[in-house]
Image (cartoon, rainbow, N blue to C red; front, side, top):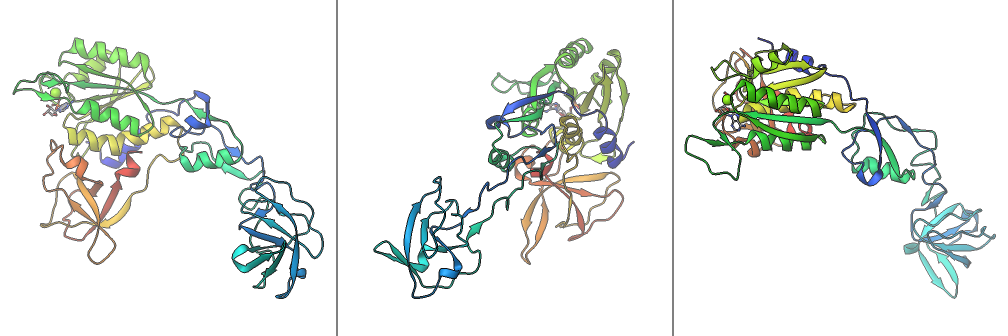
Length: 401
Ligand code: AMP
Ligand code: MG
């Protein structure tokens, strides 16, 4: 038996980052991982500009009685004239500041008549001017390699005028479900059969990680079927995930199939609940991770043990998302010989702050607990956990992204 932390570290190091890189259009960059460090090449803003609709003038020309002639109306995108002494230039948010002007006054503090402006309130030196480079200076570090690009990063790169971005190739993942009792959704089903939920679930989770679920295959519980499916997936994918058939039942043939493919097997039982049977094999230099078949176990093991490996392979900078410490609400004290991952909802407590409320039925087959939960609470093994004790919280918004 391995404990959870050991298993997580072992799995996270089970493969190196992908070496493939490509350039994508900025429009397709979100969800991709930046392959090189980027520095800013231009100052943003590129010139001093106005933060307000108003007037540019010299502070020295201001007095409450002064009526300054309006020299020019300069719209955003226009080129301003140099400001003549004793005059003002009408401008708008984003208009370039005329040479010679040192303040912008907002139009709400002015009266304009007969092409003259009078300003009621004394300006502060430099007010309402956005300085060249105050956002980003050319040469400054922009983003590190390994950044998962999202809308915010796309905005930053667009502001630099970048039309394409160097990114790592997308992680190609093959999914294999196993079991004679399973039927695909949409097919007729007998009472002794159940719908295959792990296949669609894992494909969705892989997609949620910005990776590609290239194939979702199903194998019956025979070694021949498993072998054929594994071969197809290994030929086409960077990472293979199988689910089910990895316990000690008579029809649990994943382990012999992986051994027959020359896989070096490691990592059998992980001391976690739900989850226990998890296997890692290396075949042709590719990791194959075998997850437990129970849907909740597969979900929890994917979230906590597989996603760090995927992030590593994607070249991402952050492999382990944050884990926070929060009070757990529980009607009766809990204790178990394995570390337990409860499906919980993180809620605002009556006293303020956050608390974790467990789902009522924690069985490893209870799929209805999954959409209800916002995350997993990790309870230590062999410790009596009481109401309001602090536990580790794995927020799935972070752990499944
Ligand atoms: P196994 O690890 O193959 O013994 O499966 C454990 C439990 O999970 C059994 O009740 C299976 O029916 C169920 N199970 C396995 N694979 C799936 C799947 N793809 N979808 C839904 N349930 C599954
Ligand atoms: Mg099975």
